[in-house]
Image (cartoon, rainbow, N blue to C red; front, side, top):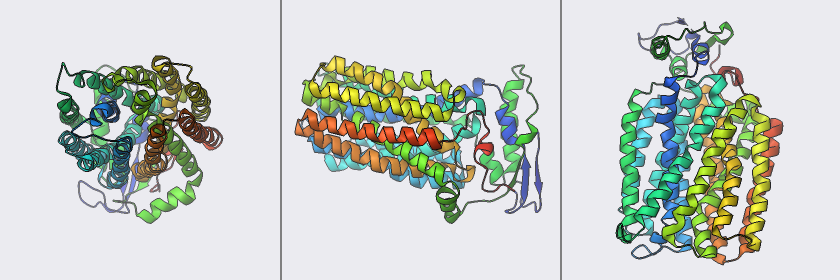
Length: 490
């Protein structure tokens, strides 16, 4: 249980650049049993996806209110607002992702969450489409930054044998927020409860208030010990891991000795040059880059195109009043949350590659079937929603596995930036274009045109299924350092 430093000592708190760190931190973290500490990590970090789901669903559910005076949004305005949020998420992911790898995971928890809560509260003060889009952009930037910092931390704190299920459940908790957003929209859009002109504003104010509470939940989460050791904070890394271990021994758990094969020798660096980041992603790990891009683009188009415009579909093709949209989004969200919870275990047992191929492939097939049923008008709004519930049970697990794949198949020094890059490209190509395209297709009033959009989403998911199944990484049960050796390994 020691981290040794060879070479120049630097300061008492931080080893000098170029000195060699011999650490067993990876082995100590991976040999921990599942415990209360990990549950708290899920709650404190998974709440980010709850917030994202809340944001996305509120924006979708409140379409009816936003299309009424004083805002009077058109269908194009709705798509523009959705894309503004996603552009902000892309921008925030890249900028904050770079900072996360450079200055640490924990600091970014608070910076990005503070930006989110301020911006989402400001959205409730919007006075026209331009101010609304600006505040949605800033809200997205905060959420995008959260994605990078938190996905990195999940990977680096959770034992290897539970990493897949944990990651999928945390990413899947987006849909708890979606259900909450649906319920809030049902309540806040009823005239007998609150004036409709104020209901949508109160909904966004509530999102900001929830973010303020989460700031307090984050205070106890430690910095990633793996990040600390790589950046020369060896003593602090030991203190963090010892504190985590003490939580288990205080409860009477006898911890086995760390696996000696998981000792890591690292040459200390205080930052990683962008040229080395590019080389690692596009030369040394080009296969992983191809897989990550296909998975991210496929799921981003699939999810954002369908979910951001589902309220428009209900209103345009089924004459569902805006105040009732939330009732249809609730079962939609339930199926999407159950998918990662039920299927997540199989990513750790059956394996990453076969489960990625299965979830992406079945999602593509089911989307074609659901789109065809929509085109010929077999079901009313209830029946069609049940069909989407089944589709997204599998698609939600597939989408979550994209973040899992990117987060664990790139070295620690560039993990957050890699997550940001793939999220940015996937969301930029699939997420931003999707809502705009589907907003236009829905506005046309043609079921055939909308079905054509569904076929495009299914094709992207099918390609991702093949690429992930053939060239994905079998990372189940393996230490992060084994899956992708740190760039600074000595």
